[in-house]
Image (cartoon, rainbow, N blue to C red; front, side, top):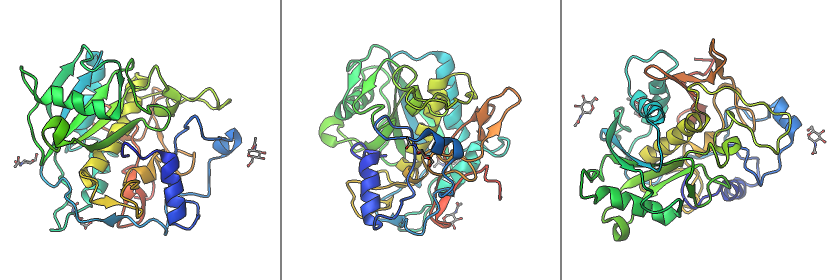
Length: 340
Ligand SMILES: *[C@@H]1O[C@H](CO)[C@@H](O)[C@H](O)[C@H]1NC(C)=O
Ligand SMILES: *[C@@H]1O[C@H](CO)[C@@H](O)[C@H](O)[C@H]1NC(C)=O
Ligand SMILES: *[C@@H]1O[C@H](CO)[C@@H](O)[C@H](O)[C@H]1NC(C)=O
C-alpha cells in the first residue's frame, strides 16, 4: 500500500475503473467500514482468492528489485529482543532453502514471477542487512508520513554506525513500537511503502513503515489474532509466536516487501489507471491466507498442535502471511493452496 492510498479510495478507484463490478480487493476490519457479523461468520463465498477477470495487473516500465535484496531495519522506540528475533527470522525465512512446506520461501516464489523490461525476475535472495536502534524516539511518539523519512535520514546519517546507502537493492524498513502513533495508523493503514525524497534524505531509497498495533488497534492491524470490539461474537485465533502485535506485523511486512520489490518507485507493477492510487500485488490479496479466501473470509489456514493458527513455515517458526497476486494465473496464490 502507498502512503496516500486509503483502502476506501482504492475500493472506489477500482470500482469505478472496473465499471462498478465488485472488485477483488483486500479486506481488513477497518473501523469506519460497516461490517455485518453474520456475513463474517458465513464467509463471503462469492469471492474466491480474489480471482477476477477485471483485474489487469500491468507493468509500467519502471525498475523492480532484481538484484539481491537487503533489508535494513530501523527499530523505532521500545523493542524487546524476543520481538526482534521473531521479525528477523521472518525476513530470513523469505529465501531460506530448507524450511518445511508450505514455506515463506514458497510464498516468495509468486513475487519472483514478476519481471522488468529486460525480463529479469525479482530477486530470489532477500537478506537481513544492517540494523539501527532509535530507542529514544528521535522524532517523537507521533510521526507523520513525512517524518518517517526524517527517521530514515537520521539512521543513514548517524555519526556512529549509520545504515549503508543502497538505492539499487536496499530496502529500508521502519518498525515502530506499540507506543508510537503514525499518521492514519489504524484508521486506514497498518503499514505503507514509498521512496525517500532526495530533498529530505539525500537519496531515493525504497522504504516501508509497519507499526506494532498491540496497544492501538490489534483488532484491525493484528486481525485475526485480535478482533475489533464493534464485531460482537467474532473470536480471535491464537497467534503462532505468542505476541499478537508482532505476529500481526508479519503479514503487513510481507505485504509491503512484496510491493516494494515489484513497485519500488511506484512506476512498475500495479493495477488501475491512476498512478496516485495504484492497486499493488498485495493490496489485491489482503486478508486472504488460504484456499477459498476472499471478502471477509480468511480462507483455509492451519492449526498447530498447540492451537495456534498459521499458514506457512519459516526457518523454525510458523507465520500467518497473506497471499499475493499472481499475474500469470490472475488470482491470489500462496504456498498452502490446497490444490497444489
Ligand atoms: C446481515 O446479513 C444478513 C445475511 O446477509 C441479513 O439477513 C441481515 O439482515 C444483515 N444485518 C444487518 C444489520 O444488516
Ligand atoms: C546473491 O545471493 C546469492 C544467494 O544468496 C549468492 O549466491 C550470490 O553470491 C549473491 N550475489 C551477489 C552479487 O551478492
Ligand atoms: C520469471 O518470470 C517468468 C514470467 O513470469 C516466469 O515464467 C518464470 O518462472 C520466473 N522465474 C523464476 C525463477 O521465478
